[in-house]
Image (cartoon, rainbow, N blue to C red; front, side, top):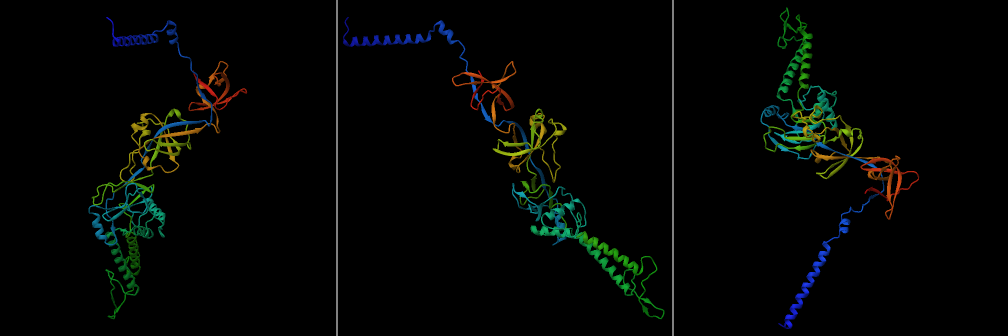
Length: 489
């Protein structure tokens, strides 16, 4: 049957499409089918690639990195246990001292610096403050006392520009009383005093001294004194009266005995006066070794009844101990410069090695950290022994800063980096992998010239650090900065 024009066009299109498909299949088949020779060629190893690196000129330095921990400084808890009496009303003060303790003012904030002779808080209206000194406040310092703690008080007052008068060093005499009173008035408070008991002792001693003085005066004027010290009259044979001679017959009688009793009364009075008056209570003045100290805690607030510390101070600042691998003993010496980096805080500071201790195995006696004495001068542990250096042995390295450590570093684990210059000037260096030692014991490096040609250069190897080695061309050969040396194939 003959096809019309439309039918012939459809048949032509179908024939062309079939031809295209057959052609495409042939092309695809030719790419998938390989000859045996081509398959062998494709399975051969790749052409070797030469790995090179440039020769550099630089100072050769050795870098040593180890870890360390910052411990907190020494902590001091200020916890008043009594209220001192004052000169305004000693009797009322002694009664108040037996009442409950209430926080009436907090004069600092956390992070502030506690300085000598400046109130930190008030407890029942009385100040608590710090003074510099290594001895803790373990007793009230009273007039008439002597000791190293009194000497420490006098030195602290002198540091504030307040002298001890004529008192000898270490004796709490009238000059020291005046100095303590001046300190309290400078702070804006009434000075604390010993109280009604010593005032009564002074009153009684003064009365006895005055009576003994009157007796002596009467006897010196020719009027004998009776048993109670009052003057009496002695009758004469003619019925008149005359003053007795005051000589007496018994021991301790007469003018001589009265004068002796007067001297004893005067001495007792002087002792009573010396023991009375301004004092320094341990509940108010706290001695801290390192000032200024940082206010690290305020456990109590205004209105609280005090049952513990009102202020916690941290003095001495953070302390850094590094953990050096015992295998690296000898690589560090005191005075070596270091950089300390806290990755957490993003802080890097510089310092130097102060000392290197003996080998420590975590958990042994040398790793026992100070656990604190409680009360004043309490020292926090420098870290649990079991976690120090990941339980691995170490040499403890003490690091001191060029400037005071940042307080934020307390409690942080840090990276300690030591960079030691091995060459004073810039030298030619290559990676250790570039060095080859032949059977003739000569050391060489292989330089790849432009275009791929290689030449061997004899060198003398010098110091090495961090994978780099100093090299010096030997035998008149040439090696320059920028030459590319072979480090692998």
